[in-house]
Image (cartoon, rainbow, N blue to C red; front, top):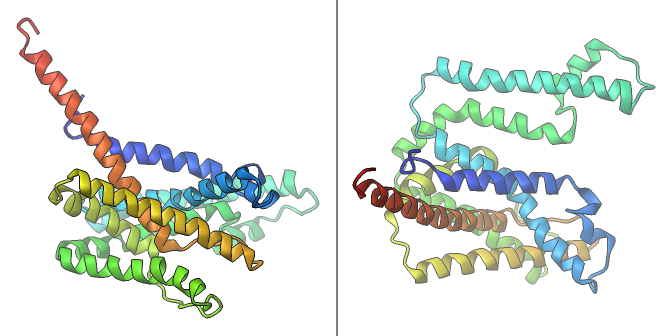
Length: 289
């Protein structure tokens, strides 16, 4: 096996994200369990802490896509045939079978109408969980422009963009609550799924991580930022619910949690890879092997 080229950290992140996708659909038995108990119950805080990761799962998939796809060279014809068309067919097929299921099992009182089913597939996600397919399709459509962007974007400009995102979506939301301005929120659109997360994935994988020397103080700082983002987001969710609102998270704090997870998984998996490579070289140097 080619250990040198294998990206174990991305595979590990996929496993983590897949688990929390499942956990995120467990409703009151999992993700929303804290909504069934009181703050005096320790399980409330365990549940609300785990719930934060259900907002990281999809973010990780968009980040991984950016890490792997933005550096590829593809013409528009290949992109359309290999990627875009596949997702268009997925949306049609999954949407059609979901509509058939709804008409025959979930809501048998509804009449089967092919025209209405096609209208529904065209204009809606059919069910909420399919929103990801449409968002990912949008990402694939703008992929050529993102590739041009990363080719011409300096590290300094990337820090400027991502720093602005963190200020608006990680620092301001908790401050609004602390200053009593939580009812007067700043609304800015950064197109997180389509732009910020793929650019972050590419930047971390190909620019940032290879250039940074990961000393123990830097690793400690990274983990402190990640844990602080996690803790503040738990507090933010609690305060928003205390106001009688449905649970909220600050997207920028979720973003910092995701970046911290990427760094930790990359460091751990790179260490494992180094040990396997060293073991392979040692074995190859033994006469008779």
